[in-house]
Image 1 (cartoon, one colour):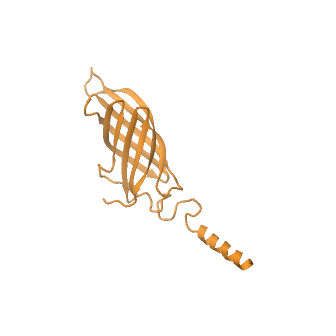
Image 2 (spheres, one colour):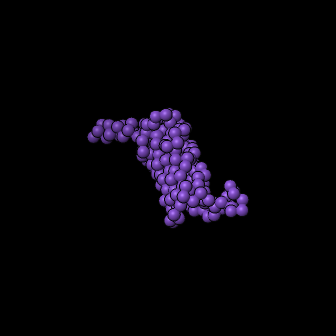
Image 3 (cartoon, helix red, strand yellow):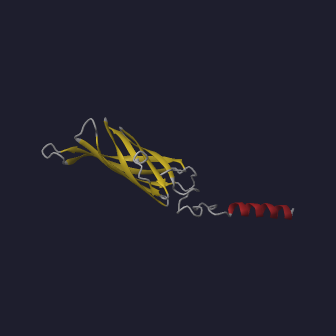
Length: 169
């Protein structure tokens, strides 16, 4: 009986003692909680009242790729549509993103920028992330063409996950 209990305890100890087995990141993953590190393709939604959007970003070799189609956003808010490139940084479990300024193609006198911060869930093998952000909307100053004035802003919720682990650059 003692031998059987000792064997079970030994197997359980070995099973839990591998790197990352206690909730921390595995080795050689640049601090990422994901087994393969942060590399991969991510997508998320940005939501607020009368606002919905999608943000996509791709990481390869622990940095965001330069591929514009894999690093973009589209926002639909209050009947206006915006889209453009983004810049995203992943540091350990913190994700920070900036949505570069874009004008609505139908209403060229409006523009939008934004940012978000999110936390990459440490216990998620899917690379789930959740956070918040702000979208700032502008309208062109009719007296000074090319100059934009604050129009309104929206607090948004950000939710997403990693779609794939491998990327090509």
